[in-house]
Length: 133
Image (cartoon, rainbow, N blue to C red; front, side, top):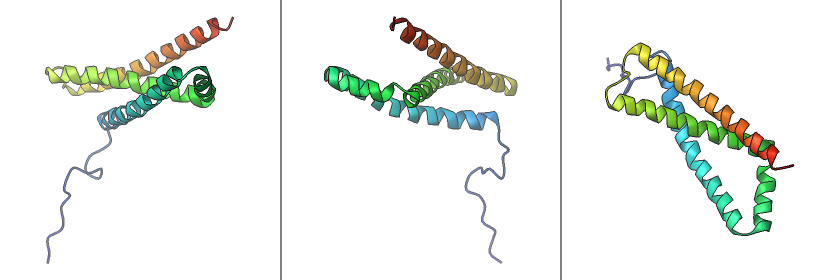
C-alpha cells in the first residue's frame, strides 16, 4: 500500500483562522494597493504638468463617487500599512510577541487605520468645501 501524501506546508485544514492570518494577508494586499495607487499619483502629476486641459480631464475622472472611493481605499491602505509596519518594527526589537499583545496590537492597527482614514476624509472634505466659496 502506498503511503498517504502529507501536506507540504501548514494548511487551512490544520490551523484555525486567526486575526494574525487576516492582518498578514491585509498587509500584503495594502502593499499591492499602494503600488497601484502610486501609478494613479504619477498619472495625477503628469496631468498637472501637462497643463489645464489635461488636468481638467483627470479631475473630471477623479471628482465623483468612484474617485472618492479610490482615494478613501488608498488612504486606508496607506494608514494600515504604516501602522502595521510600526507593529512589525516593535516585533523586530522583540516586543509584543505575547498572544494578548499580538491580538491587541492587531486590533489597534485596524481601528487606528479606520480612524485615521476617517480623519483624513473629513479633513479633505473640509478643505474641498472651504475652497468653493
